[in-house]
Length: 112
Length: 466
Ligand SMILES: Cc1cc2nc3c(=O)[nH]c(=O)nc-3n(C[C@H](O)[C@H](O)[C@H](O)COP(=O)(O)OP(=O)(O)OC[C@H]3O[C@@H](n4cnc5c(N)ncnc54)[C@H](O)[C@@H]3O)c2cc1C
Ligand code: FES
Image (cartoon, rainbow over the protein chains, first blue to last red):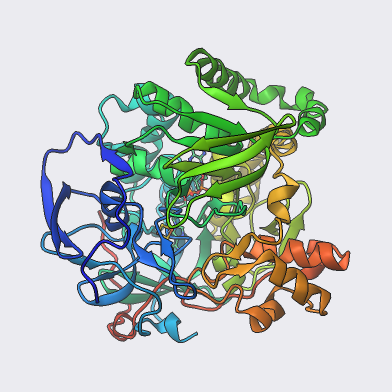
């Protein structure tokens, strides 16, 4: 697994939060601080637009719906692959890694 | 299976909050499950602890007004279970959900599903590029994450949510590069005939006009009647091109927010085996109910935008009607009270629906997104193009479920949520049949990601009062 951001692009979003409490976690090996209450997909969008490459053509993909419907935001969190970034809050010390292509089945519905 | 509860509500939006609050006032034990961490649903997402300065000025009084509804619910005796993601239900009203990394199971006589809507798929070439997000996603970023675009975005599509988003960005002093409107001229004419009925909702119409006026005053470029939309970029979004009023335009962009209305989230009603019906006026499926919001499956009640797209006000009214119906069945109110209390609500709802007819006609999705061009990616998960779907339709594919085995379309992680409408419409068009006849994807549990470990760590109940 590579620890580099897949495609170097500028950050897409900026925080306008009033919350001053920060949480530190690692995104592809890089330590990143985000306001408390930030979800993983939003944290990715503060850094880049891309959170994985696709299963079929291995092309870049980023969060799309932010409400748990599209599954474009799948990332590996603390070693467990295919987690919905937009449905998971960043926790201190969390390790988030972008996924490349197909990853091994780990979820019940991965076997579908 | 699981602990027995008198009433279970899924979804803490205006519909579910209203129903749960009212039922609990009659001393009934109500449990409300919601996957978010605070109540409010989509429209009032995180209204009780907004991280934005001056939310009323920035997001609008309609948003902050939702706090009263949320407070009434939190003060009620209803049991609130936040962070509960429901991944299965069935016609016996057994409910399975994931919370804190473990699965829990409940059974109830009265299951109220109020899970709301999702963005309607808006497929065009390049819509899968990173940097293209839904307008709903942009709104969620604002409301719950307090995050705004770093560079001026372009908004593409049609519908009130798109204008609302532009207006909210203006309130923040942010730039919007352009609004590319896909509403076609004939839609304005079709909508006009519903205008007299829509007068009950004049406040909402006036608000819409105010948004437009503010957007004009801010000098944002508005391109009307746009078609032939295409997102440009190799690995990530670099720009978009489109034609508007006979002219071709190309604009650079790093962020594009798209919107083409919303459709009900029907996975749970499907699992509960509720009958669905295709609504030609909204170009989408909805779930059948009687006038008191009960589905075709006994004890399964469907309210809000998760049943049929009627907006937040109707969601609240339906929540009240449904609550009265449940209270009558639980013998907390008698027939006479029920009739007296429900009658004015039914009248109010009917009036509100007139406004919806106007909005449906005006913001009907453009055909270019219903049956997109051949090169367009239809299934984002398995990367299946419209050309492939047309080809298998010509080859005799009978419907979306068969399309799965022909093409893997709809078999990816989203379980067809973002391709179902397009696949059915393409097959229907190609075979000259109606979408109602073509049908929809069957779904099976779990409808949310679930690991074997999370399933194994199952328990019967973890409800707690918050
Ligand atoms: C992203 C988005 C933003 C919107 N913003 C606005 C707006 O600003 N103004 C406006 O008038 N309309 C808006 N709408 C339309 C709006 O959804 C409705 O008018 C209104 O919120 C509908 O209320 P509801 O109670 O039916 O559902 P919702 O408000 O959508 O509430 C449903 C709740 O159920 C939860 N849920 C869904 N599935 C599950 C599950 N499987 N398990 C557990 N919980 C679940 C959801 O997270 C949500 O909290 C928006 C729609 C979307 C998709
Ligand atoms: S961004 Fe769509 S599911 Fe997370």
